[in-house]
Figure 1 (cartoon, rainbow, N blue to C red):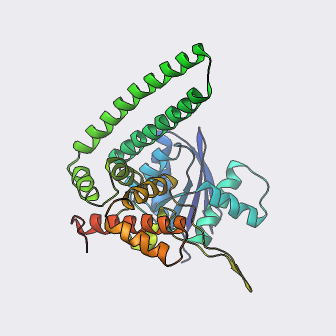
Figure 2: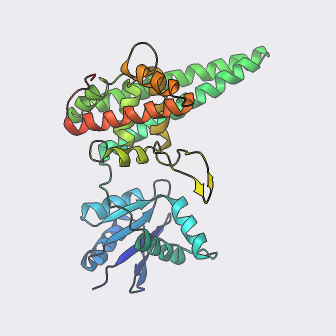
Figure 3: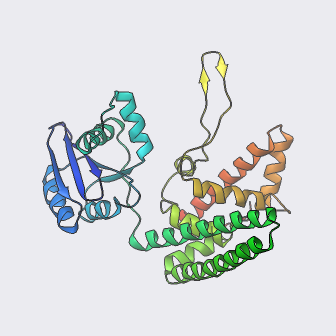
Amino acid sequence: MEALNVGIDVSKDSLDVAVLPTGEAFSVPRSSAGVQALVERLGPLNAERIGIEATGGFETIVAAGLQAAQLPVVVLNPAHVRDFAKALGQRAKTDRLDALVIARFVEAVKPEVRLLPDEQTRELADLVSRRRQIVEMMAAEKQRLGRTTQKRLRKSIERLVAALQKELSEVETDIDDAVRGSPTWREREKLLKTVPGIGPTTARVLLSEMPELGSLDRRRVAALAGLAPWVRESGQWKGRSKIGGGRATCRAVLFTSALTATRGTSPFKAYYDRLVAAGKPKMVALIAVARKILTIANAIVRDQKPWQPA
């Protein structure tokens, strides 16, 4: 029997479903009752994959409900699905057509089914994300303060920075409470912080944004963080390898960790110096250090052993 693949288009009020290759299509409300009806209808199909686009949080309750019913749900990057639709020449856009495109995407690409983060991990991820937003707002206000000479505007900016600083302290306290309240997270954070360059912020971003840490091999975990180089070649022409994609937040904190680790006398400083001495551009060497830090962090979480310099 040919494997079935399901695409679900999630909107604010409804869930449009397409099943391939049978061509079955139906819609249910995006509510608790609708998700339960969806589970009851999809359960007997024994689908190979059920694809859902990430849609700013609307998909969370649907994906969690399907996973709780042990159905093979995959949360997809919307950009990948859009590019796939363009490749198919699909210009029209309705909820039913979007569901069909998602079903065709999972049928053709066969994305890997992974466990979704549990509720605690999602809450920690939201707190870490909120901390990042506040830090970015503070940086923007401080830049405005440096460009402003008017006394009234400066006072306004200073009041806002003070308010943001207070909010940042409260969010960081919430993050501390969340990590300390979980023995697993507390132990993992302790292990991760044994790696030079990894501090509390990097450890908590990795815990919340990369729950797969420790369960993937080094190539896949590097790709997940967008630190795996991809090659650009065509015939005789060979372009430079680049990095990109993946989880930008993880990549950013790992790059910051690499900057920290290449100072002083850490083993990563020696590794960085060897790469530069071999002719690698400094940025390439830093990215290699970030990738090495991530590889070590992945092995530490997998083996549950602290980092020890070779």
